[in-house]
Image (cartoon, rainbow, N blue to C red; front, top):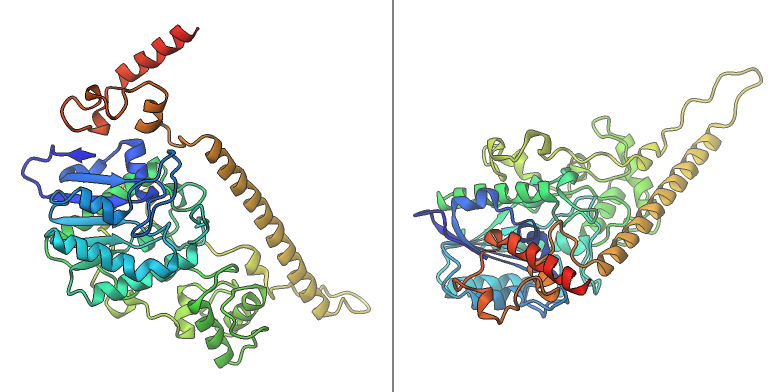
Length: 421
């Protein structure tokens, strides 16, 4: 999609996977219209490997091939919102490939949005090669490459900016709702303005997001090793898997520090206390890493601190046994009972959540046009728009999706229904 209605404003390019495709599906570009731009966003797109088949029924070009198709049209700044479908073993090659192609085309700067890793994220690509652990690894490598690129690659910290703003996302925590489209276009536009003004927007370290049961990887191993070094026993040792034993160990560590909330989850304060995270904001509070508050889409949508997991908050917090004649129940029995109840409640809640997610995914497979408006591809398949190869489909040589003649499409649909009847 092309937009050239911003007069003499800079020209930018935007390429992404389905996490950016909501902008196209809702056809709402918001603050992006401060610039002239070309946007290529496709469901199930991968960065350097062959893409998976999208919810719109076809296999799109990966990011590198899309860049080559748009050779010479990417403008001064290329914004990338991709990685959610990439397997972990391609991350370094994918980042290097995008930067090399952008340099070849003469793009001045590449801005890559950090991937969401909040506890509301429950997304994996259709072949289950990616996960929230992959997204954390992506963020770490992006920040490392940005630090060594002399400002050519800049990481725009979407993960931190959107943390806690659940109304911006569908149930999987990565795909945008209408409010999320408004938020991301505002965020991107503000970031691009800062980059064009000469600022470096990259955070000093990858964003930290709360670790809860189910997390795994090197960062979990570091947390477990830090707990053991602090004298807290972790059943099973430092195995890199955040299970119930690790949750209990974290809660025990938190009870020993009055400044920490006893949740069993590793939030920023706990991570900093354990020494596994150096908060960049604490080192340099004068360098913001998100767009200014006045550019936020709405005050009610502003990112807030991640809520604490309710089930874990009960770990070890059993009430005092009541005073009664003849003595009360042994304290250890109440502790064991509270742990069992908390774990049972957490398991039951998680099971209901998983069932709901599976139902939503089954619905999405049966109804691929999941946006409020069906995609152009859906309308073409239904005969409501001319095929892409027809001269009538591109009277001006380019299709501007936000300027499609919806009246003509509706009339065509009604005519087809009347003929069928």
